[in-house]
Length: 278
Length: 54
Image (cartoon, rainbow over all chains, first blue to last red):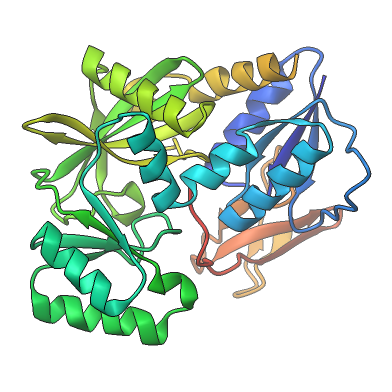
């Protein structure tokens, strides 16, 4: 079997996956650097399945679409990348499937966004619809800061930043949960703890062990199915009314989670990809 | 053996290094990318872009 490895930079996660693929009998790994690829809309790359590990969302989304149009099975699919890469589409998918999430508002102008924030109440969280690693998130504590942040986004940002995604702020007591789903299995979970209200490990949050309870497994699998399934990481808040799904990530990072969980992520991911390509 | 493009320190690549791999110069701390393996060539890793992430 020929496995295409769609990538750009090779980080720790990609290195571990490459090592795991090389251990498998009968698997030939074909490296596909998105910085060198040219698609002609006709040719079919000589691979049976593709694993997507791009660092740019836009390249992943379009690359997957082009590969799928050539008839190649991709993990994750272009649809999953499209939905997970856009918080509005993710929230819609979660809502369509009845998966619990924080209250959300979407608005297109400064005035309507301000009304949306006031409707949710302070504090609220403003997020770019497309973005990751906790960047450009704003916790809006009052009307004055709301007006200022909205004005800055409108004037200084590209047009993407005038699509206002507003989420009700959830008091999470310094931590959230990240769970990892591979197919129909929630393979592991970690707590991400920080004194900062943003608890991404990319922003310095510390990972620690988290038991995969029945509720966590069920909610994670429902979130994964809502966005189209595959290999995804689900971010969740613990609240008095149960777990709420915050985001779903389709090119999941797991370097901080292997030793914490004791789970062999590359082994499970590679097995899933090979089965998908069989 | 390769040379750090920033501080000229000599850097030995791991035997299993791959093209595109990120690494850090032990001398100056710059994040580097393996641009090619034969010949070995290192460059400064690209700056974070707006749509980078998971």
